[in-house]
Amino acid sequence: ESVLTTKSFGRHYKYLESVESTNRIGREMANEGAPEGTVIVAEEQVAGRGRLDRGWYSPYGKGLWFSLILRPKFPPIEAPKCTLMAAVALIKAFRRLGLQTAGIKWPNDILVNGRKLVGILTEMNGSMEEISYIVMGIGINTSSTLEEIPDFLKDIATSFAMEGVTVDRREALNTILEELEMQYNKVLAEGFNSTLAEWKELSITLGKDVEVRAPGNTYEGKAIDLDQDGNLMIERADGSVERVVAGDVSIRPA
Ligand code: BT5
Image (cartoon, rainbow, N blue to C red; front, top):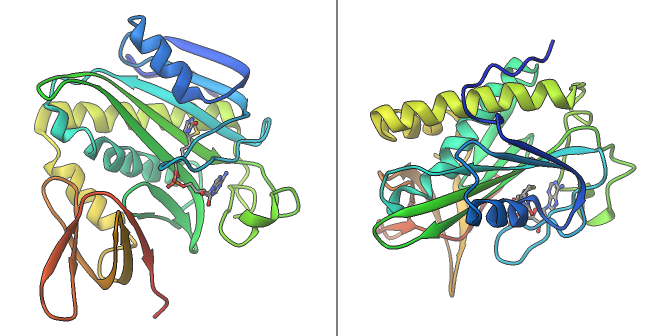
């Protein structure tokens, strides 16, 4: 059974066989006035993107590669927390789909046993005062097998299939859109506090010794908390606390 039960998310829907990047189509559609909740899904992305000009491997039919347009009224400074919100909603959806072991690595990865199942790319357009739109891109590996994925991903990526869980992509997308819509409505009604609390519960980064690679600065420390803006707080050996606004964090083996 896969009947869409959302009110807004996925009600405007564009399905494409092959695109450069669904986020790119999302930005174009948003610029042309596409409403909140618009979803763009592709079977394949030939130039799927991650953060910082990195690529996102998106082979035909092997994953859910999609983007969601949001038009929230909250201030632009809140926008980065949409990535954290999405990660929480995705974990809840995955549990409903039979995958119980996924956790969140700050800021935008969902991992299973240390391997990346999901990447999230949140892009915003607007001014300092007002968000015009957010395009939230989500890539989920569903049926890729270890044999199929390229060598550079063999040690770092996983999929539902590789974790022994079979998913129907249509049902999975419906479940995900339901959870995303519920989480988003909660944020709109109550703000981000309870979502950030849920994020902390589902995080695999907090409490760990990590290496931080921020622009122009690499250091080690312990991830001790998430602040109100969604930044990761790192305690260094000398007791000082750093806030990571943007960057990559790798969890050091214990
Ligand atoms: C991300 O970037 O994780 C964000 C990925 C967002 C993808 C979605 S798909 C729909 C929408 N349209 C797009 O064009 N993008 C979004 P980042 O944290 O920079 O991680 C990128 C790194 O993840 C790469 O450098 C690889 O190491 C790894 N990677 C690439 N493809 C992968 C895959 N399919 N599965 C797991 N890891 C992957």
